[in-house]
Image 1 (cartoon, rainbow, N blue to C red):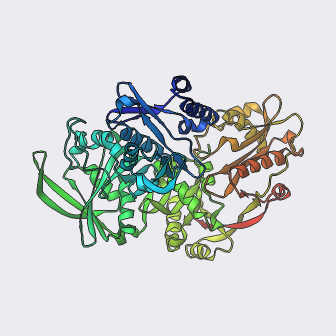
Image 2: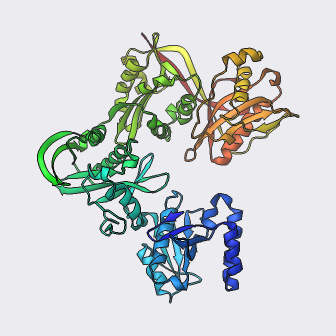
Image 3: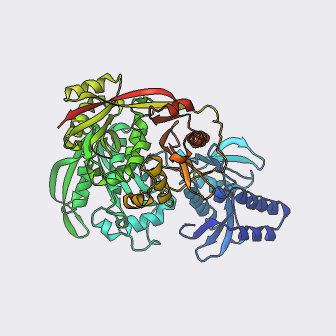
Length: 613
């Protein structure tokens, strides 16, 4: 449900749409409602894009309805709307359409919304103009067509972080702006803003669409939780301010938003220096500045009078050169997605480090044998919000991965040095380097590492066509849930990785369930189960939409079923499922003849380099 100053709008239920069909005054409208009901039932996963939406006043009085007529594969929806005659002339259509657009553009797959009106319906055309639609110059069945793109809807300004969207303030943000900024007394003690006692008295007219005020929105909901401001533009410098509703404090949102804003100001706006200030005693705001790389510049005593008190201001500053310099910090739990993004970017073009991809990190992160007490020792090098280098231990200290993005390759020796200092164990540190990667090999040798006999081989297979499946009689495919079916999976791994058939010993040694792996698709957990449901073999395969590869891990078959083609069957089925989702190839770290017989081919060879403690 979307709530505005006067209205509430929401997708109608099947029963409500059936009532609309029965009450429709003419066959044409009856047919339209019938199509909405049929399509919403046909597409339950996208029901809200096909259903009729009820438009009601805040007390529940029906005043009209609207719909989106679906969402095309190209990311385009078409909106239609109508207000009952008795309620026309009150601005309800504009208010409802704006709220519907706010809901629609929260969906990242939506690129534009179109509309069509009768050429004589000037009121409807005014609604579209007020909501930002522009004429396309084309004419449809009903009349002239209009379009509102995502870029225009967000004022042409849109930035994203892992959890946030930064874009223009909109008319529909009034209530969120009121509650999180202008009526939040805790925010007003830290951020200069005019207080509003009631929503009705709040003059919001000067905020929407301004380039110097940006909304901070949660990606999850699209709702405004804070704002960023820019002022005092002069000589390539500017000052920024930021405020986040007190209900959202302590979650790192301000730091995340300011980092991304600074990146835009330097790289897109061309500023050379950016200032920010805080009231004396506001240590939380100071920490935001410091986390973003800003440093103390000057102090102004009693610079202004605010809320009846003389206020001191401390100023911090950061210049372009300092911002562009990678900053080392330690891993925090909220960095999880950013590390995955880094590993995806690292392997997007050059697959030298494909042995350490996002899936290997995710597999390790929630593996029972991974020592998570050490996570704070992972080193990250960042420029703004972007991770450009990382030193990550592998399960526990003693082995590590070191990687940097290509444009920061001169950072590699520093990453390697950090790994040696922070990630070694009592025996030293080992890292796997791709044969032929001379720059990393030279850096390792210069840092005192030496090649060892330990190696890794990476294999690859093209997913050009489906693989034939031959599942032995008496077995069926299953997709065990990594959490709900954890004990059954562990019993399979226990036997499949040759720990024996002693159930009592297993019960003593079994590990607690792993945590939720956020990117793993349970459909890609392909097992073979017998008639009793016991698992006999499994292939896990990892695929992330937006990448072109899958990663195979783990694969096992219990001893009693080996040699019967069961391993081939589960791996082939997993490869087919990854292919259906968009994967063009699959990788596995192995040199077993089993994979060559399946059609895998040599891809890369890695040699471990060790430095003894």
